[in-house]
Image (tube, rainbow, N blue to C red; front, side):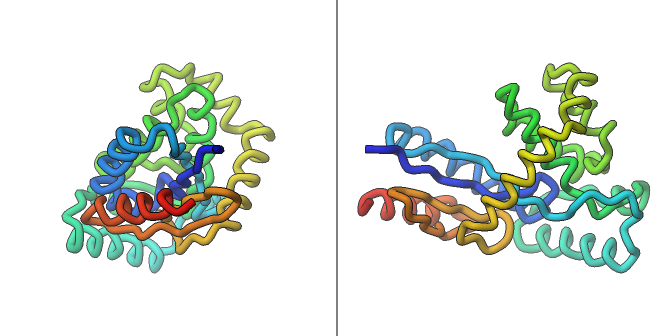
Length: 210
């Protein structure tokens, strides 16, 4: 029987995805232990915000910083608000999405997501900038110049658009979302930011019936 696939639909610059990490990491680990033979876990970038060189409007900056505060209040997630005071925010997450696709080719996709989130949320760096992404790639042992060429290539752009299109065909409710695909049927999985066991039980139930 063909393996089922659990799609984790995310954006590396999605603040709720950062808030979800403390639940997502143990969930992934548990799935690997229990269902490695039945289930593949696949990351999909959904693409929050297209390329833009324009500074983010003040009103949007305030709205997003408030979102960070809300997530911190609900989940105790750590954020470095110096980003809004010292950085030059742009509403552009596609470069960070492309970076994860390039890193995937080196077997470093999850490490790149982790590096982007830490740079953005904890160190007030801007992953909309190619130079920031190239530096992160180098920290993972990827040649920075080669990475930059791949990041800006037409091939990577086509891959991104294809992945965004596929993600939007799935029954998702924004980012992050979990969707289990088995026997050509897509099952949305309950997402719980505080208890990974909720999603695990849902996945277990779906796998038992397919």
